Length: 143
Image 1 (tube, rainbow, N blue to C red):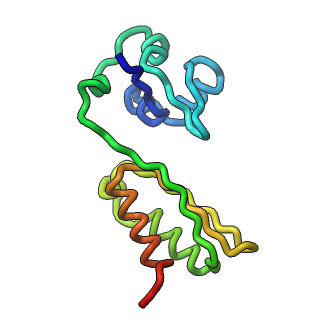
Image 2: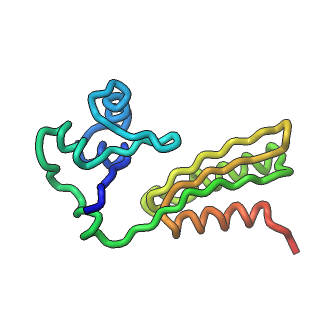
């Protein structure tokens, strides 16, 4: 049987805690987790040990769950001035209500000295594709 891993956000939802509280438990060593890049992943077994029993109200194990795909994307855009960076950042981070955007996370960093913009998107495929379309609409070749 494959291991099931949870994100910090999923653990917070399952336990009814704030995300910062779960991160603090991980940092303090109270909850075992594996760091992958800048994110933590918590094994189901470790979460059950932490809570003292099986998880109630959880999603079905991965083998029984519907297939799910998630994209992690880094986009670098060169030749971006401050105005374009601000417009793109606003468009990517505030367009639509969160429930319409799906489960996604966006980070944008502008380096004015190099006129370079880096966008990191982690989320479901539909939302990621939509956000990539927004980037293309503001930075793509215009006819």
